Image (cartoon, rainbow, N blue to C red; front, top):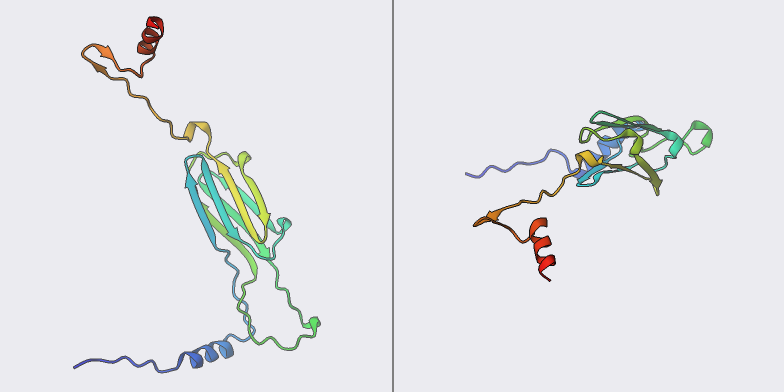
Length: 158
């Protein structure tokens, strides 16, 4: 015997109920963020539509990057637009905290705000960047061809 699940309300009716229940309610603004880490540093992209640089505050302490700001509610009763029917966009104060690699220098953070996207670039200090280590190996008492001694011998023979 198969069991069939029946949803008690059609999707349009559920959405209508949400509209009526949340009529005029403003949800919190939580900007989405992307964090990319590469060998040279960290890049963060945060969507903050409608905000200006003066609406944002950026702080880097230890391994915690914090972005604070406020997206003000753009409508008022004085606008004469009538009663609010539906508010889907979020507004208000926000704070995003992201974990980044430890040891990044707060003085080196570069911030750019363009087309509603805040881009932060935090380069890794030289001491934290990965380094390629050359391996010196000997075969039958001779050093490999990549060693400085072998290169000097080859140059002298020429």
